[in-house]
Image (cartoon, rainbow, N blue to C red; front, side, top):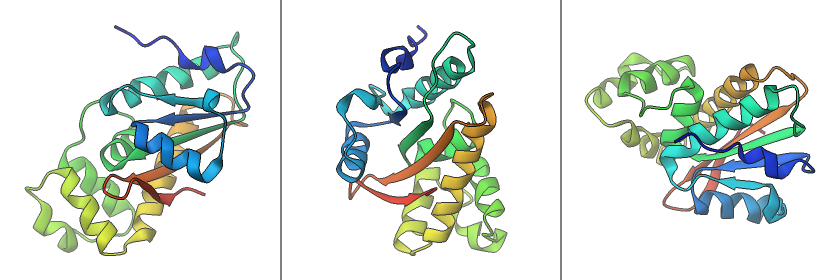
Length: 172
């Protein structure tokens, strides 16, 4: 069943925040202090792509009022998913392509060739590879912005660490 366009309820908002979990919403709210009305939280992590796609489609509709900024607040797997603009769980090959585009060498990725994509985040996070995480946030931002017909709408992408429930990287 398709999601109803969640942006229809936000016509007066200049900024919209799309979150993939309740703790993503809380982490963003603690930093930005936006009102509850601007948050759209997917009821489970897997539906964040559909919610974001619905918002992009709504913003591209001529009859819709568009926000000036969209914040995307998501965990690692969804960050990779949105940066690829695909709804299915990304493969490790998909993640490798993105990581290679950020400057990670094939040799560095070799130990992860049979890993789950979620095994890559701790390696980057605890290895203090925040430059790489920021580059992926920027790739996600650019992917969403490229889908918007109205090029004045800005997108910010924020990565949440599930264990700390905090924003650990951002496109800002």
